[in-house]
Image (cartoon, rainbow, N blue to C red; front, side):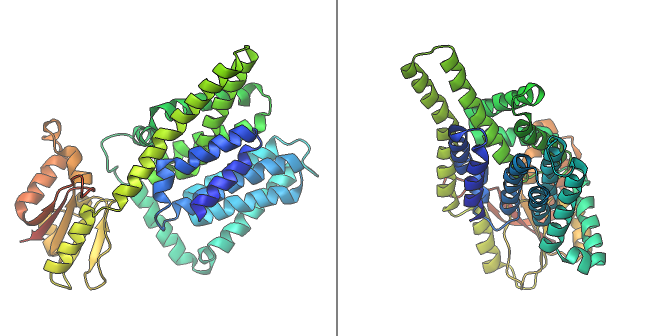
Length: 398
């Protein structure tokens, strides 16, 4: 429901660029594989994205209406985004930018900015009341979470590279190039006008948000979701700009319509195909489900288990299991035994990237080779066309 609502709100925001821009942006968001996939799961990223795009819409309206209440509502939307997921709280820069670029704000821009901050804080506490009601636990939990995001990265590539690759994979090359053209167009319009504010909101939030998440040390594709509506709006704006440029140059209507249809289809069809294929794949029995079934059938209840990777499964409560991003952060087989861990599920999401000969001297490669030698492999689930997912190895601590 939140994912679908985000498409509608993105369309409403896109109307500030025009009806065609709004329509193309909404369709791009509706078929975006990253957005489609994550909307299947009960996680915070999709609702946070909804509140971010609501913040964009309300910031545009606040600039238009120039009243304190309109700015306060935009700030409140950003507060709800932050209450849903902390990183989405960066959306507060949109109403603050709108304040700074609205000279007609009544009675002053400074007071309007105060209302933005107040609205954001009040809405955040309404959405996450135990921030204050249970302050010690909140601070302890936040500190633990922050330390995990500053721990050594779980990939050999820098964050910006990982996320650019994820975006390119989700959008495909045609839409990626269109979005890049939209980003360039947004930078030019932000600097030179016209309507600098609306372009500034898209560009500033997208760039700042990407910089923020790419400098954390835990990477998941879903972390990019809050900036996706802004990217689809920029991409749609680039397509419409191209259409207008052809019209200004006197390109015949038939040729213009053909080019428009071709470019729009290139931006929409490949991601839509990937989304549909992904839905079909989700209906198959994954390696994670195979591993789950095997463990429940073969591992004694009460056994303590470590499960590695991001694509994991939730065992019944009578299996004391712990999900870990990287096994090597928890130690080796000897330390697992001392900690009472009896079984380990290793994932190719981690050991797979160090499996080739180029990494045979790396610490990570040597860690996994030693782990496989010091444990007994009970089962291995290798991905195939019928069983997608990571390769999983069920290991027993001897």
